[in-house]
Image 1 (cartoon, rainbow, N blue to C red):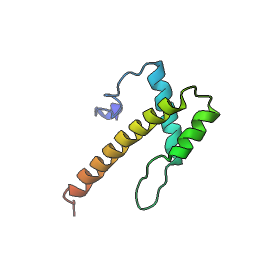
Image 2: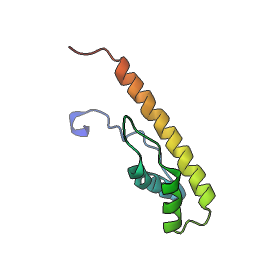
Image 3: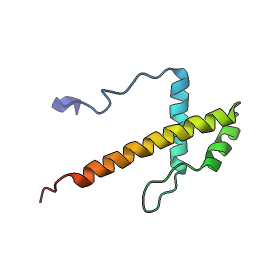
Length: 92
């Protein structure tokens, strides 16, 4: 995109500190555990708890709450994007 003079979707990404980066990486990894059927599902709490224990997270409850909040926000953004796409006029 940069070569074509268009802005990249990565231009507006926020800078993350170390702790935020770690949570972001864990969230990305846990995103592979989603239930996908008729649509995108949330990350199962059981998978979050198992992952936290496997990774040696000291405050598992805090970790669970943070990941669930990130997931809720992510699902809200996905839903908003899907609504916007479905409301676009077709180019037929």
